[in-house]
Image 1 (spheres, rainbow, N blue to C red):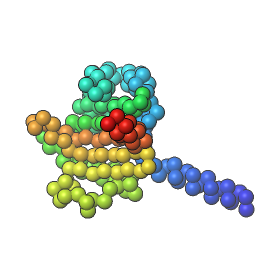
Image 2 (cartoon, rainbow, N blue to C red):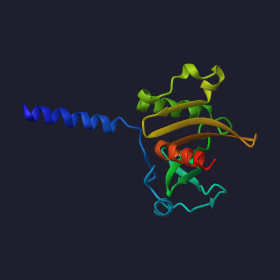
Image 3 (tube, helix red, strand yellow):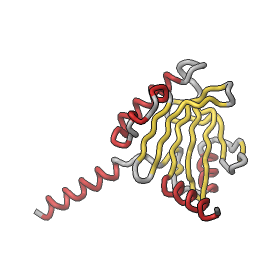
Length: 176
């Protein structure tokens, strides 16, 4: 009987842990990795830091992520930890339109994270074709087609640590 209960508890733990949204990408973990760790991990993978933008985001170019070449990958930090990772993908299927890639990634995310998908009934009809979101208690995912500088359309996939985002929002609120 004790073995059965222990097996049941362990099974529930495994199911709970495996049901969460993934938080580690390119060897870097949301809410855990530091700037130095990210820079070192990316260097080990053969990527050079292209620039640090005005918001202190670490920007890398031409990064391989799943089967895509990302035009840019941006790592944002708060309180010394990795707040978010933004992947901006080049169009692989149709070099002018990111819609086919959006549909492909949305179907992958739907299959993996359907329990965490935001109800699309709250989206305006036209938004459904270029925007979707998922979240659990720790992580938020945003998949979206961006019109960048009104001349370029990019597919963006963002993962955000909700604990750090909440802390940042509270800290900003405290300053006001």
